[in-house]
Image 1 (spheres, rainbow, N blue to C red):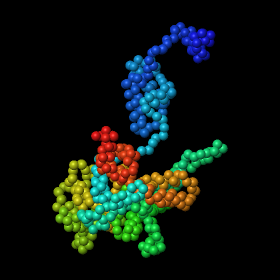
Image 2 (image 1 turned 90 degrees about the horizontal axis):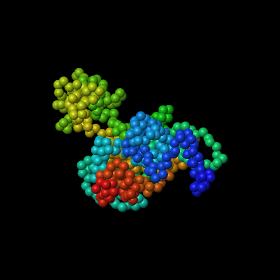
Image 3 (image 1 turned 60 degrees about the horizontal axis):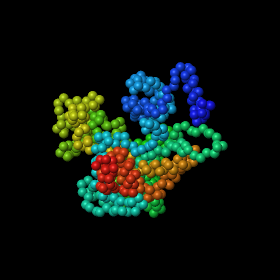
Image 4 (image 1 turned 135 degrees about the vertical axis):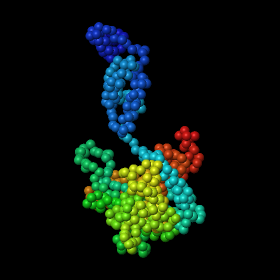
Length: 523
């Protein structure tokens, strides 16, 4: 301490002098000072730093959790020790604190993972092709027949009438968007953070998500939820009540074994049929409904008698149908446009009512080739082959290719339009934002202890959002803004930035698209 004081220093310098003395007594070597020398780090070596970066990126790419100790262990591997020798560093290990400091220098931050726009599968080749076709239909066929609202719910554009031609000939000109989706609410889905008094004691919390309830509903930007308001004057509503139905298109479904079962395409078709009844009663014939659905397998399910070459026998069969208990397959269409019966007539002398078999069907279409087998092994035909087997030839026939789903056939048979959103594009269905707002309300409500209380709670949360019609129109505008951005050539995560910057618009003009591309460095 005396020596330290004489040099104008304090207790810390005195301890340092003591350490130097102890080191000299043990090693008989004077300590080497580093005053004026640069403070180097192992990360200054580019090869060493690059190896750590690649290792961390591989862990993050696999969604694998890692910590600072993993960096310590990686540095101790033979490969990294060799790199340290080449860099001239004698040290062989690092501490966890050094690993944390290195992670910060490499721009890693410890925190909660953030949710973003789901883009997995957006740029798959078949998805992009379908999305382009859907966006073109929306911009050229659907939106010109819609009334456009701003974010405050005011009308900013009304459609200008023109003659409908082609497949839309004879329809009512005005189009109302009716979007559908299902969502599931869970009993144990509530907030995990709250203000707690210091005297509060820890209580056991239920495990798992708890009881679930599915909601299937339709939204319309003009009205909100698809339902009839006045139940006293409409004969249609009275008939619905007498037949056990309701004047509301919304459906609650307790999915699961020993409950309501499972929500299949049959339940959806019944709900859609009732929704069309409500839509027609509410519009009184002045508009055509554009019924939009997710591109889910259950929504694409075909009718039991739909044309399908899968599992067809090659030879005649007395009672073949596409599935056990299914009706006979509907007639096909010959190349000249005339119908083709796939079953022999009941008065056939040898095979009354029998299924003809693929060979006979192809012969009638003049497509039969000697030596054709029923199907390739495992139905794994070569991509370039179109006539390798009977099944492949029929699959490529126009009437089989153009076979529509049961859902589309139902909607179009009622004189309305049916379409499906592209896969992986939940941002295009504005009802998803409605579910999000309702679930936010649900998580802030009190816990429920019974199914009836849960259903009442969910209904209250859904109705608290749907009463704000301008919110529904804002959701619809946000989804339309995504479609407009896709039409302008933007893709993927760029759209999230577009929606934040141009949240006040429904359609992005070309100068906005150019501004976005310039900001992203595309032009």
